[in-house]
Image 1 (tube, rainbow, N blue to C red):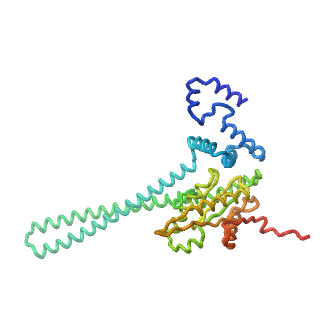
Image 2: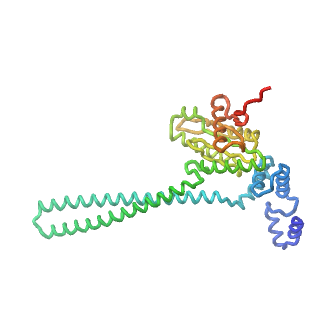
Image 3: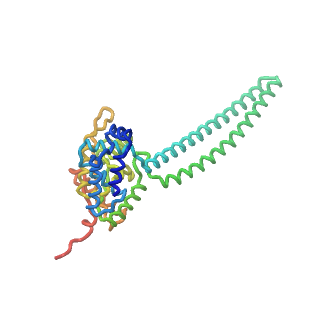
Length: 357
């Protein structure tokens, strides 16, 4: 019935509105439009997989199924999504960045005030030196009086500045505590431009609950810039720049529903929702290919980037920490074999002994 009502409303729309809609290639001017067909396909896939058609599941499947569609349809839908994009997480990230920038400005004010106080102290010393010179070389009592008065004025100004400097320092310490408390609740990693570890662990825990409830498949991959490559470069600044490049490539290859985060020490993670191990392997393969074709230039030296990846599934029988360790073990397995870029580690298949016959 709701679909019928929508159709009637479109047919009874004013000619001007219809003309405006026809000029928009993204407008849904019929029930058979590409985007409407695709939306029905997404809803059918959710129902077939026995999942509730919630907005979150619809969004996840909307992104996942889009990967197999034509480039034209993908561009059309991406353009539409960009027009209506409203991401609370992105708003939070911008707020965090603004807060940290504001704190940085306050820190600069404190530094400038400290330098001003130092300069005033230096001026006091200079005036004291000049007064002594006047005492030694001049008999003019008037000059001495002016110098003494000036010295007293500077001393008063210096005392006021010292008091204000102490007040600014107190305000700075108070602001620092506020920023520290905010940082304990942040979700963004400023250094690499992705989510942070805290946000990642929260999302993995949420996904464990969803997998347990709805029985779908999700995966986690851990990514690190090749240790051999870092050792061969031997330059900390260059390593950081290469690691930032990896972060940008992760964002470039990820879907909107994927969670890209910095786990720590240059190690990144991607939570792939509604993605089984086979699909996670394909995603890792694409990522390795993308990275290997993204060269990095250090002075006159061209460096081919390389990463190692560990892959595991989101198993509701294990904790967040155990799942992360499983992905880490997969990455270590990839390092150990030398000739592969990624490896799979499934805890339930590794830890459980085989039944004896």
